[in-house]
Length: 160
Image (cartoon, rainbow, N blue to C red; front, side, top):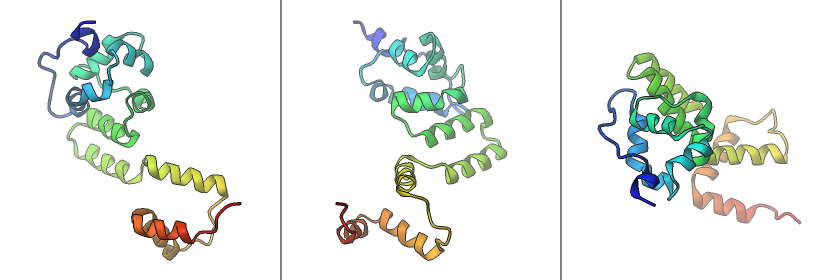
């Protein structure tokens, strides 16, 4: 297998600047993200019929399609909130509205560990309606600080 089949064609002057953050990120981190897989394999796993679509995204000639964000996240093991940020940056560039939307998005999207916590809570039952700010802050403190979390886990009743 030659070097080109593993990495795709050598990148010759990919676009950079406003709206190109995802292309720049992919190119900078490609070897790590690919984990030895060919661009053809990655493109297929994402759901593209041909690898040239992924190549165009890597060079900045095409923007990441919104509907492919979950697939990029799964195949390349990337945080979906980060990918949404790249998507907004690509479509909004440096426009003030885009930056405001991106900031709101980053504040509101649930990331991996947060989603795991939410799923665990939902599996165990619903959150009480009378949950107050003080209790929410206490829960957040336990999650955010490993020492407090460890102490809380030791104090929690063990399941039979």
